[in-house]
Length: 440
Image (cartoon, rainbow, N blue to C red):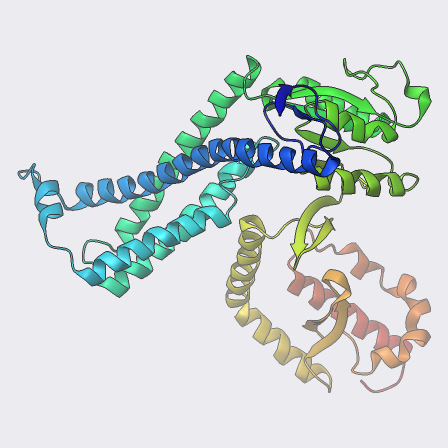
């Protein structure tokens, strides 16, 4: 049996560093078995290479966390006249329970870093998003350290130590990740760590995507070309990417060319069947596929992909996301409202007494208003009309513009709401006493 290197045939799986064909006179089953043996021997090498890099990155992160904790403890507790504090501290006997708790803490740190997606590809992700992931992971690690210190009764670790650990570890991990990103960008600009990208769809969405990939050389993508069944795109280049054929040629291309990733930019309304077939083929071959998710021409909403028990969902959000900004605004609203209520409490008490003396009925007027997402919320204000004014609304509507001009001239931008309510109530009472003989 003779082996020779050649282009990949349809029967062989992709992803091998070399393309092999089994040149033998045996039956097809033997050739398939032979190809499987080659795949078993070669594929783990590429997987192991990625696993080694991932392993060293994980070890680096955990080492930085341990170093941050050690530096914080030394800085806070090392006496100025005892330079051997570190040796004396490490030479102390460690209880078995503390050793087990320390190991569990390391595993918790690793889980926190992994769950925040720190060990997935950030090639298409912005630096800000990656730094946010690191910050969330460090917060979880700090909380885990504080809990472990309480369980193990470690005297050197308290709130101050944990705060210093959090700041220092955040600085260390961010610095290493920033250096790694800059180094990878430099390597990609010089042609290293480059992935070949195939584009499906030559329409406006595909052209925008190709232009952005061409502009961002630091991402390390080489646009192999594009496929589209519309022959109007034949012999047309998109940012240097040539037309390679229609969708029916996709299987041939991924069998004969090195294709690392594929971006699908077809219109989903008219090309749904073609998109489904392409995704199934690429999934079978193990090729990373990017589906452009700008499905609708939204102007304000932002897209957020999520996974709901294995069901992929793309969510559109038009309101500000839940973050520290929204929480700060809510806190400011509550604190500000509380302060103003306390300051104006004497004035509000006088207004309430005046309302009770002037007319029978409740002091406050409560009415339902529509809030966020059509939620009904009660609005409470001082009553400025008769108790049953809502029942007589239709009879009184035509008098608004005639006798309530003064009240409408008083603006809430110039006076506090309580003063405006008092002025409007006085005008309304005068109107009621002049126009109606009904007792209030």
